[in-house]
Length: 315
Image 1 (cartoon, rainbow, N blue to C red):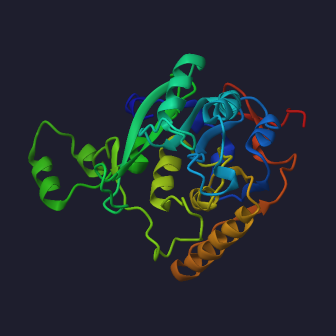
Image 2: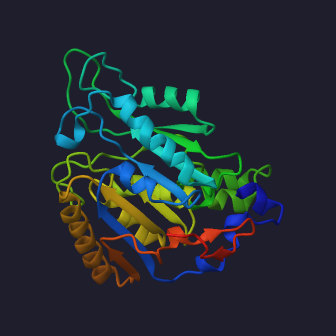
């Protein structure tokens, strides 16, 4: 993205008129199995998949899988199929492997992707947080990994949307350096692949009750950098509903699901908080949420090579 802009060119994903914002974003939120949903989606129809799968640590009925890798490979193959050529898949997880029943880890999924997928591992992002559980038999964990896979080498990435501003002292020093372009300094720094974002504690105002809820700031960074306004974000482990809320705020469409019916309760709480925030800040987001995946959802708006939308997918 940034290299193209320097050359005065545009990425194909920036040329579609449906990305002229504001518009009303559409969100399908379903209670169903992830593979059932994925089987119903057209090829190359999704820009970004945010995937926070169960870790098989038996938190609830949805977190118990006798053969974790075999179960995961089913949705991994579908995920690759539904991604656009510029699309990305991000998977949350941990690398701490436990050789016993009741464990699922990101390392196993990465190995499967390397063996059975043509997708490329662009980054292994380390989510570092200061708060967490204590430990006595090993060093206490203070990080989690996010594996970023791209469907092809044409993947969309907008660094400028997630740059971190320099502190005033550093900024002043850099602006004096003649080797650096002032406009680049003003944009801020690349946040690197180590993200220092606190976990949600029990008293967090973001909490809706889901046991593994991720912070909004984390999802915002992924959505902003790996998708564009008007594109479709897919989350087939909807969990706390945070992906839908962030997508509304960022002008993306979503298709989400969760096998646990409580998902709709969590999503309802997210929308209530969104509305309260809008009242306080005076902001407004136009959106529509449905508990079915209707034929007019943008996921069925097929994109041609020039980025022009044509609704020619049979559903």
